[in-house]
Image: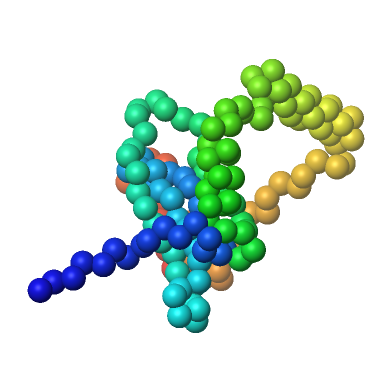
Length: 151
């Protein structure tokens, strides 16, 4: 006779360290719950996978809620569902991105104007490395190609 015992039984009063909800490889959704094991000697993570997102569907990548072993699983999942239901709004609008680009262009142009007025501050040219003693470049049959040869 075989006994099948589920690995994870939902206990709403179980103390949880953290809960994570996000996107796994291949576009699937993943929820990970980190809590102490039954014997209390180690931490264990229970991961469940959900259906994948449709192509073009986007939004918040992940939500991580840290409870610090003070909150229960029920409370953590309530916080997680509230975060997931809240509509995702990008923090940067297109106008702000354009303004940042303009600021960078102006900064670059100001630096160019400053270096034109003060040429002594320009970066130094690279120093050409010298060949070791007894070596020189020799022209080959192919135009423009030179080979290092020992004298």
